[in-house]
Picture: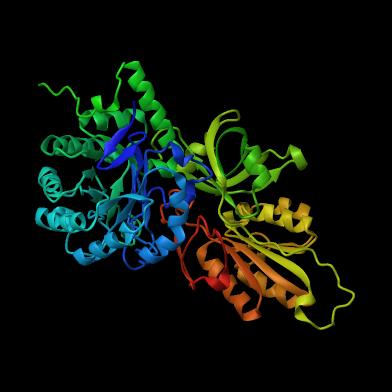
Length: 302
Length: 277
């Protein structure tokens, strides 16, 4: 009753763990039974290894945190060699988050991942605010369309496009991803933000600005999921400050087919399991048979 | 590694802004190695948002009755303020043991067949150097060294007399405990690095010396430099802000000669020679 489908991926439940908050799953093996998670989205990988940003990279804020990691990762070759063997054995859908400096890199990455059977889907991280570029791909509907289109043409695997909240109108970007053939969109990535140490006068992040996540962004994320889901027909995967089952259900009522738990994994590694149990209890209590019946069922009559 | 809802067995003020908290965590107590740490959720609400890392100060009990860990902490902000207000019988979430701790030399077994004069056959000797709250992980280390029958010297440095920590704890472990204060109100006058220099002048040199140090960054750097000059192995315990504490967020990167490492997973203890200072 909690099964959902995103593109070709059949998920046992709608709770995924968000990219960059669950490492490559092995980090959590002693604390979480990954078999209970709907799908695992791995830390974003790039074509070449990336050192990431200077320290400090994280900073606590009111009900949330800023991060400016800068997509530190070992690159695709090392990822396939070092991380895939473990991921392949878990037995839940594995979705690989990728990011590229240009369309070619997205294309090459997708081609490399195509060959690996154990990979169910690809999430396009076109919305990381911590890399030095003019703007984010996800801030431009034309660029979004082109990147998604290039990947779509290259793979039969499920493609999820991860959107940025740092835009004027989320619906037009979501529409561009849909038009280009994305199977689903996931939103939101982090909000650009900053924090300053008043004693030193310096930013609390080495990168000066960073991405804000945690419960402090939830109301805005929820509104954006609501808006996006009303304007596209592909599934929306909602995220942004989900800490418990009620938060997850709110996103579903707003229009999300599935959700991702992100920053909460840092504070309570086993939180995804609790959220799944909480959703099941909610369905039972409200005598709802299928989880799909909740998606977008908000009573928004004024 | 486990995430445990742990009962607070005691929480006592031990100095100006320092507290010692004992936690009922049998699993962590039995598996923790010196230098490892735990992540504690100081509040059940959203403020403060992240867990706080605390090094394991001591493990209490013997054999199968080992069940408590102790943390020694300084009240420096929101998280530690809330923690200081906790009472015996309250519960907190404790995740651990985390990270890579100190590596201890094995007890010296004189080899009757050894060729005399070989450096590697020298008896090991540990010099522990604690700066301020940096003493916290070093008491458990000193206990481990004692168990391994390693001759140990302890140097404690602090700004002033009433912030000297763990003097008595160390004295129970070794007779050789030396103190320095920056303002000269207790022990030798000056930085602990000067005390370290002086000790090296007088201490016997027939040992294979290994130095363990935890404290402010400037002090670590200074001690690491002295060790490099002398050819001593030096293990430093770093303090970094971290979110997850288990290698997932990559928030606590440390620059080393072999690329970025994580303070939470590869550390907090690093070989000083590996770090780019």
